[in-house]
Structures are given as C-alpha cells and as structure tokens.
Amino acid sequence: MWRVAPCAAVRENKSIETIQYRIIPRRTALVELAGKKNTRGREEHSRPGAHTLAEILSQPQIWKETEKRLKSSGALEHLADIFSPRSPWLFVGCGSSYLLSRLIAAAWTKHFYIPATGVPASELLFAPEETMRRIGAEQIVLMSRSGETTETMRVAELLQSHKTVQTLAVTCNAHSELEKLCTHTFKMEWADEKSTVMTRSFTAILLAFQRLGLEFVGDALLSAALHELPKSGQAWLDANAKRIQDFAWKRKFTDYVFLGQGVHYWLAEEAALKVTEMSSSYAQVYHSLEFRHGPRSIAGPETLITFFMSDAAREYEIALAKELKELGAAVCVVVNRANGDLKNHFDLLLELGLDAPESARYALTAIPAHLLGTAIGLRKGLNPDAPKNLTRAVVLPMKRKKPAVKRRRA
Image (cartoon, rainbow, N blue to C red):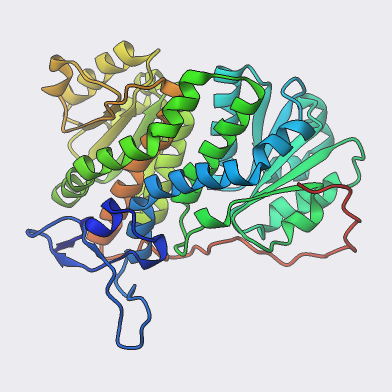
C-alpha cells in the first residue's frame, strides 16, 4: 500500500514545472514532491497520479500566480469595460466546466447581485431559442479548459448568428479553436493541467471570475481575503492533505454522497464528479436537507456522506449529519469552524479556519474532494492522471463551416 506527501518544493514556492513526486511506503509519509530528474534530464512523472497530485498541491501557488498575472495584464479591467453587471449573464460549459459555470453564476448572484445562470452546452445546442428567450442573456461565457470541446464549439458557432450577443471564450489553451468563434477571449494557460481531470484550473478560473465580479461591485473585505487566500490555503493543505489521504486509504465505501445548500450545492456537484472521474466510484449529490426525503435509505456503514456546510444552513446541516451518523453512515464535514460538539461526532472533520467571508472560501472548499478522489483511485489501483474511458477534451466529428470574422477580442 502506498501514499504520497508534500515536500519543501511546494512550501518554498519552487517553480510549478519543477515540482514532482515519488511514491513512498504509506507508513512513512503522505505526499512527497521533489525536483528529481531522470538521466536524460526530463521530469519523472511515471507513477500513477503523479501529475494530479502535483497539480492539486500547487493550487495555492497557482492562485497567487493568477492574481499576479491578472493585475499585470489588466485583463479584468478590460473585460469590465466591455461587459455589464446590469444585463443578464449566461455561462455555458460541459462537465466540470458546466459545474464551474453554475458555481460562478450562483456566487455572482448571491454576493454581487449580478443576474447570472449556467446551462450545459447541450441544453443551449438543442433548445437555443427557448433557452435564450428564457434567460434573456446577451452576454454569454463559453467555458472550456481545452478550448476544443465539441458541444461548446457548436454553441459558439450557433451564437455567431445572434448579432446582438457578445461571447467570451474562457480557456487554458494558448491557441484554441474556441477563441476563433467568440467575440472575446480570456485565457489562463498558466493554470492548465497535464492530467485529464480539472483541479487547479477549476479553482483558478473560479477566483478569476470572483475578481471580475469585484471589478463590477467593489468589496474591500472580499478583495483582501482573496489576496490572503494563497497563504492561508497553503497552510491548510500542509495541515490537512495527509489526514484526507489517510482516511481514504483506511476506509472503503460502496457509495459516496455529497451534500450542500445554495452555492455549496455546486461545490458538492463538482466533488461528486471528481470522485467519480478519479476513482470510478459511484457518487450522488443532493441539496442537504433533501437527503431526508428518500435518499437517506442508503445511509449505512458502506456509505460516506460529505457535507459542504454553508453559514446559512450550518445548524440544520449539523442536525442532519448527526442523524446520519446515528444510522451508521460515515460522515465527513467540511466547515469553516466547528464547535466542540461537532468535533466529537464525525469520522472526518475538515475545518477551513479562515477569517474571511464565505465567498472567499469556495476555492479552498473544493480541494478536499480533489484529494479524496485521488486517494480512492490510487487505493483501487487506478491512475487518476488518466481515468478510464475519459479524455482531456470530448472532441466529436464536427461539420465545420467557414469561421465568421471576429468582431472584437479581449
């Protein structure tokens, strides 16, 4: 049995490209990253999960790099000049990019009062007039890490006939096909991953759009909290990464359930997808209190139920978590701070411990599922870097028309 653990390379903010890791005996340490190279001078990433683990643990560094690059480029100021916080926004994507769209839209609506929603690309593709009429958005963001996802590109082509619509391609690909089909482009290539599954790109794009929201609606407290997040996030990872991986190695489950309310529901959705992708495990998602209405029948020793507790629903969710624990389920709780009573009731308690508004905690809240999914996959003998049946981008045969001339581009 094996596991992995962070080394000084991450804590000392070494270059992301030089970070590597090696598998070591489980009883020795959790994750060890090193700058070791092979005899030909190339990086060693031959072990299963190597890229994924390095990318997960690099997230605080990527967040810092994101803030630096966005400030130096002036990209957010430029986008804030082009787009409006008063008109509806529509975010579109597939897979994690779709869930990221819903998360950003929910956060914008709650914290910035900007009208926004998200739909999967297929929904817009197969019911374009109905979807556009229902949402009324003429500012449409198309999310695709690769910039090559077929459904998203087809939507971009479809929207070219809507002359009043402005489209924004969001990608981590320096040269993507998607940007050729949109009126504006926002690229974050420094946040891209080598592994199949989105981890650091997900949280980096989330933080970038939180900062774009701040361009529209000033919030000094949130701005200061996001600036401190890389430092506090690194401290949290140092203290908790090993605990999460140890728990995943020690306990085996048949079912995984993720619960959340409000914005946290979309964090729960993404968490379930991460565990499913990385470990080929069955995962379900519900609004927390909905779990009482039927789904709780699966609560038992073979079920791990993870709560992403929000400030608003915290007391109700604690009561539900205790009920499920009494039914024999294993319970994991991700919460900002726990009282003494909470600490004594659950199998894995993960306190964020941030002196920051709830809106500044979303990126960090996403990380436990990254570590959990990776550890479960490795325990099952899988490779989280390249999950079975998955590719980095879903590219389908596509009849391409001659691209329209782009009107503007950021």
